[in-house]
Image 1: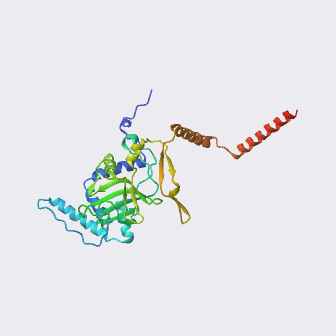
Image 2: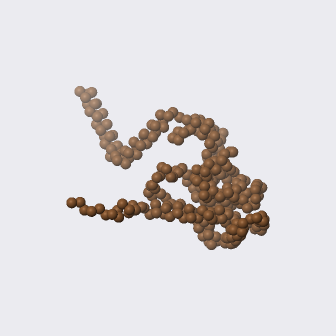
Image 3: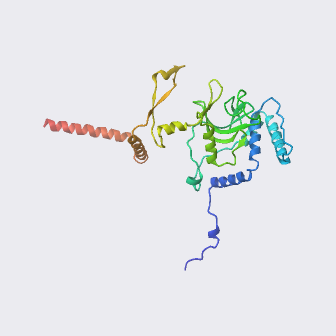
Length: 321
């Protein structure tokens, strides 16, 4: 006779990993804090840019709601208090405002449906904020990475557009070899918060704002570039994921500066044969399988050489007979 089934088993929640539990708690906290997301964005932008000029006076309409006026004063007070912090206190405050990402150690449920996977360059994760004619980038521990004028909205004194309180916040990766900020996500743009927008809309907005030339150059010497892949180049070249590309280096663009080679320009040649892609992929897979399961050893090479020499000697003896 089979033992009676536990009536609580159908209602028991399956075990989940610690990382999945942190994801669920983060999503719950995110949905509960959507109301003050706009206020937090203004506070972060105002406090990241510390200027000596007095704040501009805010003129409110007579029919404005009292709650909105109180919210503006609260944001201004917090921003003013944060801007007065110095040294380690300032770094700790800004570090609490920046999200700390973690490596994914297990596959979350509905990975193919609810997640976006992108390639990212190697570099320093940072927040880039432009406001009041200045652009500042801060790394995850809150310290300042760079302070420079840029072509972002209100990112330089020469190109101040819109109201003085307008700001932009970008989630970026700074790649030091080519001195480029690669934009991963857009948090706010021209004072418009994108906290409660979907990921698809934020990616569309990012491409829309950078579609003129695909990049934004700073006014530094040498300039720092905010870049993204040019969509027109992909469409004109009829490129698809998995294609191999061939580039040529022009002779006149190769220069030696302080003993180091610098390449000034690459010329796009075209796409190679499709069979080359499959051949390289299959050979790489076979090489990895052989390296893991049956690696080639020095003894194997020595035995192969010895067998070849023995066959040669036996052939010579047969010829002498």
